[in-house]
Image (tube, helix red, strand yellow):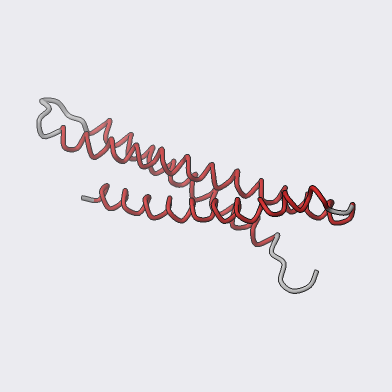
Length: 129
């Protein structure tokens, strides 16, 4: 039952990540349009902000990829656990390896998410600049 709850948690995490990615894309598109007609000093600022958005999107994309791979590995764990009832040999080693692999992938996704959050906080502007 544990892996199924883990799949649910990964699904919620993927929802958060895709929402953050959509937000980054929605904020970057108007900046790209403004960049086409911006004066030189504003263009420098817009390019820097777009670089930050690009870095954030890369980290979110990495987190989405790693989370999806973790979900696939957990799904294989569930399949193997059900298959173990019909198999005439032990599937403990493959199940253990897949589960550890899934956890490592999830750790990588969470670290990438943490980096993205740090980038967003560092770029945060409140009030007149």
